[in-house]
Amino acid sequence: MNKTQKGALYGVLLSFLLAGIVVFDLLDTIVGWPIKLLVGAVWGGLLLVPIYLIERKKDTREVDMDERDKRIIKKALLVSFILLAVMSGLAFTAAFFVLGLQSTIPITMDELSAVIYLVLVIFVLILSLAVLSQYGWGGKDGEK
Amino acid sequence: MAKNELKNQVRRLRFENGEMTQQQLADRVGVTRQTIIAIEAGKYAPSLPLAFRIARTFGVQIDDVFQYGDEDS
Image (cartoon, rainbow over all chains, first blue to last red; front, side, top):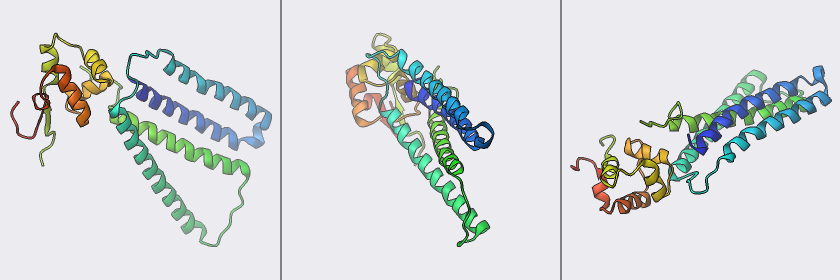
């Protein structure tokens, strides 16, 4: 498994952690901001662990990323942006049909930040899965 | 248009060149071992510069390594 694959696996993990942040973000009335801050700090620490593990065994003689990895990432980014655009379009269309063109809805800052987080979660998840699927599931990359 | 048009002799040439490992070839042409695996398996068509580097590593012409379409190896 090369560095790009490890990064994509980390991306899947990251998206679940971000999903956790979304949940906590919406639980503001229950837990209050000091606890949220603490949880955020713990999550922040957890996010650094995989980065350390990926970077740790770096051998300067070995190639980290080559033309194939770059092509895979480029294609995955394209797929992610297209899917995100389609999903956004569908969400706006659904909102239009449900609420109407002139409607307004009240939204708190917590809910707004949760929506922004959620978009980030979806993007990271799609990107990571798109990368992993191009390498082939299982991480052995057709190795015999 | 036929699928999997690009055939290659990388695996055979590796063994004919002192049983070179995939990692050794990867290091010499500047890619990861996974890319060599993918090329040998026909899952990845390398760029022209990479194809030339592979051919030069084996000391052969590029069409001795890669064959396109119905060409015989």
